[in-house]
Length: 146
Image 1 (tube, one colour):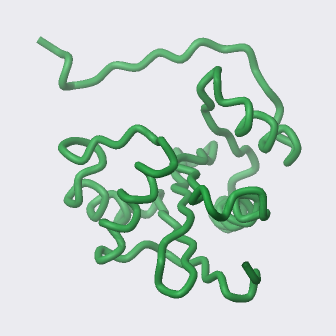
Image 2 (cartoon, one colour; image 1 turned 90 degrees about the vertical axis):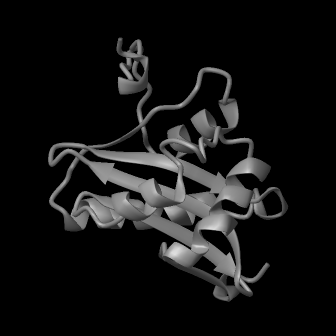
């Protein structure tokens, strides 16, 4: 892989099938009937506080990263790199691009949530200067409300 052959760009609707294939190959949980549906992804990326970047080589999507922010903190989400292209600094490049976008939106704090068994991601973010915090994550989903 030659880094000049990789294009990092914003998501387009016709990228959807490719990103779902990538997320499945990368073992990310995918909810195509819910938050990850075509309609939801396409609607989300129209918001000013959301960007979905894809990395492609020869028209094939090999990486993604989703950036969101609440005007105070930028969140790195959906970082995925195809198995064939791991350990070649592509994840670092994707994170760097998201951080540039956060900075262009006036943000100074960048964060991510990593599952406790994902030591590869923990090592990567630690290497990039992210500090680990001992917190508990709580969520509430409208689909679980009675």
